[in-house]
Amino acid sequence: MTEYTIWIGGERSWQRTYLGEIGAVELTDEQVEKFFTFNEEGEIEFDAALISEKVHSWGEENPELPTWDTITDGCLGWGAYTDQYVGVCDTEDDENPILLTDVESLGYYTEEEIADGLPVEDEQESAICEYVDELDEPDGVWMLYHSIEKGGYEGSFELPDGEEFDPKKLVIKVRQIADRFSIVTGASYNGEDIEMTGDSDGKGIDWYIYYNGELFPFG
Image 1 (tube, rainbow, N blue to C red):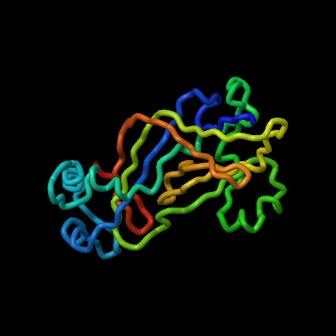
Image 2 (image 1 turned 30 degrees about the horizontal axis):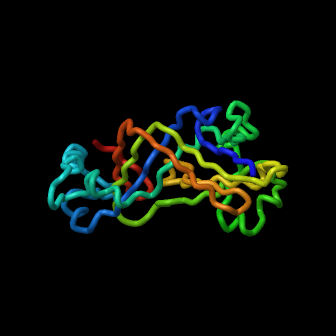
Image 3 (image 1 turned 30 degrees about the vertical axis):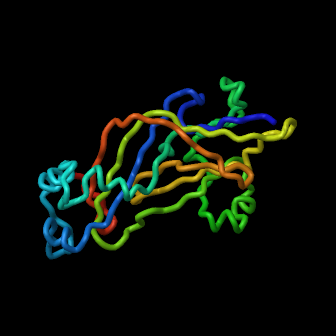
């Protein structure tokens, strides 16, 4: 068997990767009534400084709004940003990728389209992306966090000796969140999931209120 490494990031597997964790929770009616108002046009209004203060009140026994240590239960995905390379190499030869291309240059298809064979109909020549839209203009008022990170993101898979890697059998799994954030959360080869792992260091957190398809930054 020959082991192959797949990564998302730079031009080589050992280069650093930029990653994000994005999550959100829907605020309760009571929270919305207490902290938000709506003008005559139906646009949301709130005190950004007050919301930021409540979010950063970590460790409170009964916080009035989600905080970092409570909102992470609403994680929608962690992984590498899609504006990077996807690469594949023989694990023992990481200086010579056998696939290296921009993730965003690949064809994007839903799970249903892939099951229906659409990529084949489109004369697929390389890997493809299977994407899922999350928080596509949901009802209600949501609080969303975006943790910006830097580290590594890769996995490995094996093929029998003599079997060549076929990029057409590679699927990169992508989550597109709130029509703003796009991250790779997994991969598969020939229908078999590849365990993608990595470690990362946090570089910062962005906070938003999400309402009626718009993100309003605060904090």
